[in-house]
Image (cartoon, rainbow, N blue to C red; front, side):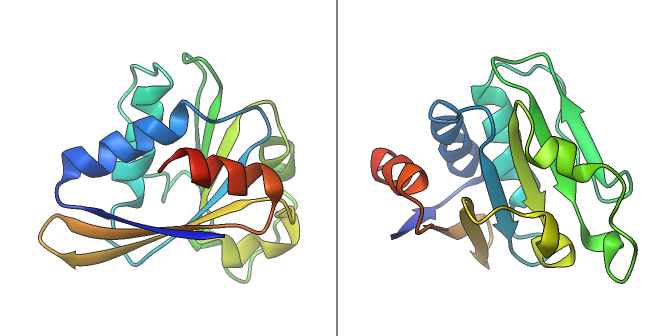
Length: 150
């Protein structure tokens, strides 16, 4: 299943993340794809807001992973960009298959750690603050989630 959503501002991108947050369950794995500046961190900040997380969401590029525990559900935000051609046995699988929702940027670099059951979200910058956001999955759990975002 695939769904295309257009957002016309950062606030709309954040609001979509908030709507997704209301549907998340422990163990959910969401892959984020998009160029630099596509809005991945903005989207995750909306998820955090929807989960009731008060902490400011920052890109985990230099940290590889940021964890947020003060919401309705733990939020794990991984940026695997710096793991290209690096050993990936650093314990990320414990978070990917953990008790929270795990959002992964640049998932291609840790493909062996990612379960088949996942939601893929591609963000495309259409200029200014407009984004095309494509949600896709073949897994029944995530297909239902996509349907409920309508």
